Image 1: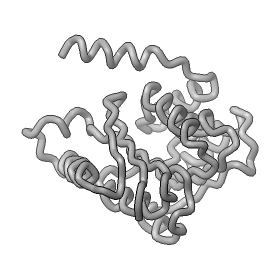
Image 2 (image 1 turned 120 degrees about the vertical axis):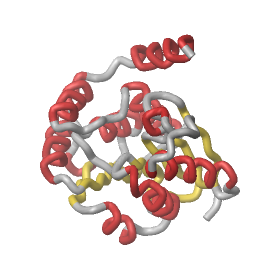
Image 3 (image 1 turned 180 degrees about the horizontal axis):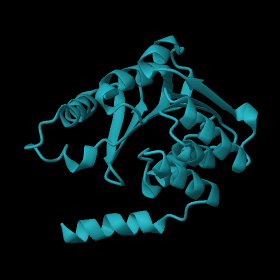
Image 4 (image 1 turned 90 degrees about the vertical axis):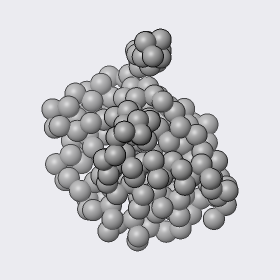
Amino acid sequence: MVDKELSWKFAEDFVVEPAAILTARQHSLELGIDPVSPAVGAQLAVLAAASSTHSILEVGTGAGVSGLWLLDGAPDAVLTSIDIELDHQQVARTAFASAGVPANRIRLITGRAAEVLPRMNDGAYDLVFVDADEGSVLDYVEHALRIARRGGLVLVAHALWRGRVADPARRDDTAEDFRALLATVAESAAVISAVSTAGDGLLQLVKVSD
């Protein structure tokens, strides 16, 4: 286990975050937001780049850390991001501007994801990233898979939930929800799935059928 922990730390320390992301991370911590780790952020950028992403939907704007990483990988993409906290989105908007992201590539929707997602069109996005309200993760991923185009990506943060998902003795509702999600996608023929152990875990899904 010690070797694994050293490897995880090495993977996090390996990432060199751009100045704009470092600033957004600091603002996240000041606001009490838990941003994606540097290693998860770098994976978001790699996946966005590899999938030739042009349209991104993010559930959970925060202070802009994950959005900046996604746009780092897909510099020509348009990012639509949902968050219930207007104050957080204002901080994120400043972070995007500081990073030189044109305003016409950012669309921030303030509202409850549970109310916004049902109104999003089927197959409208190349990549959907879910990082909000872990208690609703099952519903959010169901919507994300509908909203993503065939061949598109659905990425889910905190998939290993504080290390609790791997420990069967941990029976809290959130850990159980993530276990149920992982079990469902592992058996689904509609997606290709993988779980990265970086950070708090990143579930990666490619939608192969509707």
